[in-house]
Image (cartoon, rainbow, N blue to C red; front, side, top):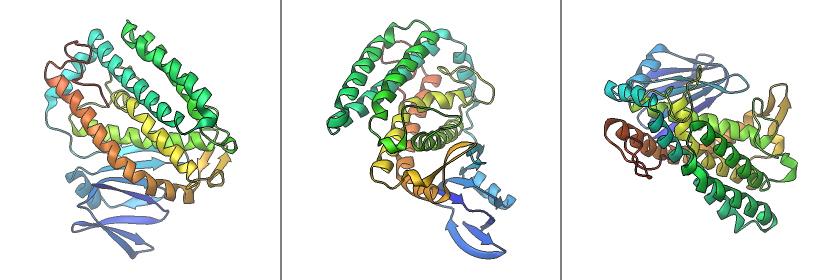
Length: 326
């Protein structure tokens, strides 16, 4: 299954049998079969017919609209999973403090271990960054060892934040000075690396929302991320261990110079990737997206199974995800 990225103004999309058809100025300019599609991402002034939206919904093809210069996502979802018992179990367990803590420990440990594995692999091939990477890895090791000692979600979130700080100190040293990347910043991103991370994290989050919705789970009710207005907290939970996949992808794009600083511009809305850069990014993103969907399917499947059965955490507690999420 593949994704379709439409980033072109003045395009109209319509359904024609089992195909999606592109029109510009009332002239038919292209056709894409619906069968292999799993996602459609739209950016810019794109018009869709209601018949096409119906066909996409029938086939469970998610539509993600990236609005404005900041690419704020809006999702149009297909039919959800029919088992409402999963959502009832999810709501019940979201009120269970012990379950939330066990779930969250697994999430945080998986994230810290993924970050540590990535930095350890880079240390072997980055002699100029070896010292900072070694320091970051030592700090991450200490945080991983302390996960099971955290007795509350608040202290666990503090530990996760400290781990993120250690990770990004090492990660930042892998980028060229001309990218002006010194650590994570957002709303708005202030450099090309953060602009790319924000876009990648946005797409990853959208995939998580669609996966959760399709599995009959409520993306808004999380266990590690608390309830917050308009935030899909469970999607935030399941993507945490997978963020490092986006980080690796961003590093590759800059190291291979498929994206360069000149592909970005500084505006009042922050550092933004231009249209030519976005075309390159989407082409390179799709192979990673296929891997992310597989990983998300496994993680979401673990969550759904744990809600329906007495799952077991890696630490032996009952009622938490069966296996480490992600």
